[in-house]
Length: 182
Ligand SMILES: NC(=O)c1ccc[n+]([C@@H]2O[C@H](COP(=O)([O-])OP(=O)(O)OC[C@H]3O[C@@H](n4cnc5c(N)ncnc54)[C@H](OP(=O)(O)O)[C@@H]3O)[C@@H](O)[C@H]2O)c1
Image (cartoon, rainbow, N blue to C red; front, side):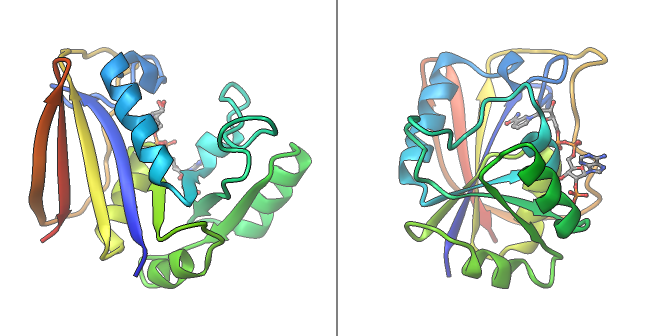
């Protein structure tokens, strides 16, 4: 079964974004770790909102390091509507519908250049995948930052996910915690 690495950064009080941007809780150390995860990835998984956000850079734009890396957008909604939206915007991303019951089959079937898939979504899709995909690893990086305002973001997935701690390391004041499903 393919390995799904889920990358998330949060502040010490659990914010995943600042004014709707994850850059507000990220640091240089976090970005360097994230680039290391990208180097292992044979495919990238993102959510619908990230894919359709015109303010975000295109992940696999021609000439970029990820130009040849397949990018997949996973949705629990209608994937044909999403595919049309992606095409209308000229995005070379592939849309896939998933449910908790089909996610293993979906991730096994997507175009991928290695056995490692990297999820770069926000917390909603990230935790839905962590909950439903058996071979997921959560790479959680903890910024040395307390941040709470109306633009900070907390995941509201209603689930219990039992995790096993795989490792903890710190780099340049940032804490990285790796978990697998227990
Ligand atoms: N801290 C981090 O590591 C990190 C990483 C990435 C992003 N972020 C931040 O997280 C925040 C976004 O959180 P989130 O990704 O959990 O996003 P969200 O918008 O809260 O949830 C995204 C999901 O909502 C569903 N959805 C429902 N209605 C939608 C609509 N009208 N348009 C698009 N999607 C809709 C989609 O699922 P279906 O397609 O299944 O319906 C989509 O996967 C942003 O502020 C972003 O900057 C943080």
